[in-house]
Image 1 (cartoon, rainbow, N blue to C red):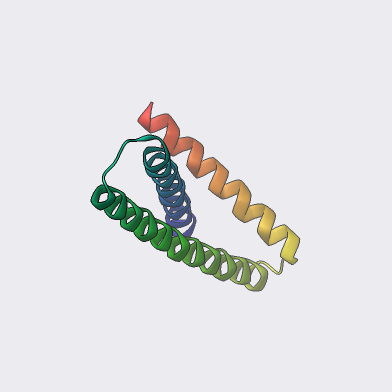
Image 2 (cartoon, one colour; image 1 turned 90 degrees about the horizontal axis):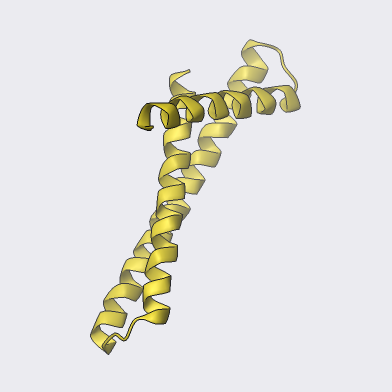
Length: 101
């Protein structure tokens, strides 16, 4: 269960980074910026994209580890393990959203 909570945290971090990247790209496209400001903004976007890629990799590895553990411990098929992971992640995500509301 702790692994599922961490997985949800990773997914939320990825979402936040994607939103931030989109906002920065919008500013870059629509704002009247100096060349220096554009360069700084492009560097921020590149850094955020790099972090997002690393988080996505980590998330996929974590999902795979949880899936293998479920398949081994509970003797589940790959599809059953994936369904359990998605269901737990959704349930935890809903609880997190409810707490923030």
